[in-house]
Length: 128
Image (tube, rainbow, N blue to C red; front, side):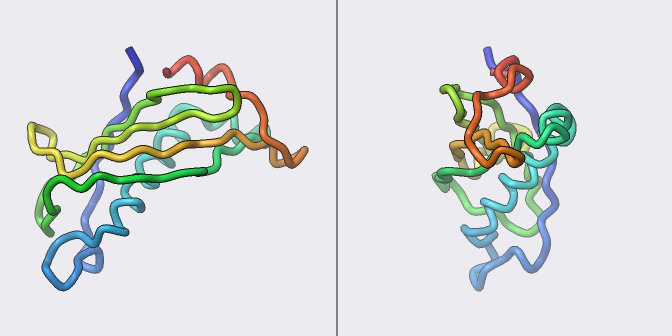
């Protein structure tokens, strides 16, 4: 079973569209916020060695609108690993049964020093 990571996300008034819902493009910012926190908390040593993860693909399935005062938690986990890429899956929810959206990002491990893709570091694989 994959290890899960959750973090609350604060909704800002500027995140809303003309209908009073969080704009669909903003969901990707929420995913990024959770992903950055995950990597900061658990995989900081990877980036300290010049290995970065790049988003190669992102998709989101919108279930119900998020409103200004809704609580939003992003839970993510590694769903699939390859040689140099892995898939993160996300659930944007209220902390209970309400799911606002589900999403996926395909991440590629990239060596910024040698300017090439590399195998997934073991510390990341261990979370899968």
